[in-house]
Amino acid sequence: MEAKRAPGIARIVTKYGLIQGVVSAAVSVIGTLAAIKPSWAGGVLTTALLVVLIVLAHREFKNTHNGVMAYGEGLWSGTLLSIIAAAVGAIFLYVYVQYFNTNFFATAIRAQQACSHNGELRAPRRSRPWGSSAPS
Image (tube, rainbow, N blue to C red; front, side, top):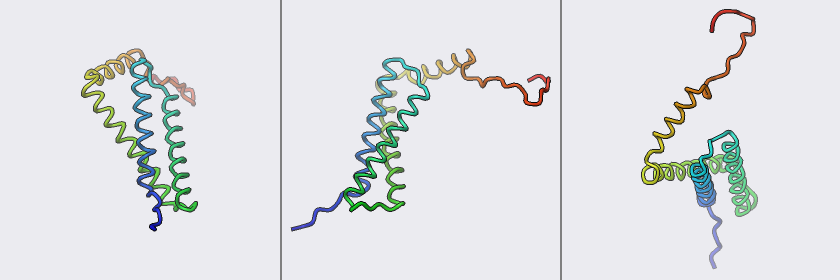
């Protein structure tokens, strides 16, 4: 009888990277269809999901490898998971922009220009700490 080989780090990480990419793409589609403006909360949620999936990938690897994971394996797994998730997101964005919403970039540029004209993207003015009355 042959002993069953434990799955490699690439196989485990690929699974979780695909999950991250698909979930991020789904959130992006929902946000676009619902016309929700991007905010810092979305970035925090995406980052939290990434951290959770990296922890799950590390846990699965350690469970299948007698509780042992080298530092390099952990670093590589997090990096590879992020690369796979980014690749899935890039493929999704390409397909979405190429076939479903061909005006995506033009609309995004117009929205950014409208925000900059309204002053939403400008940095707030700060008073000078030394009380200078020089024009800014």
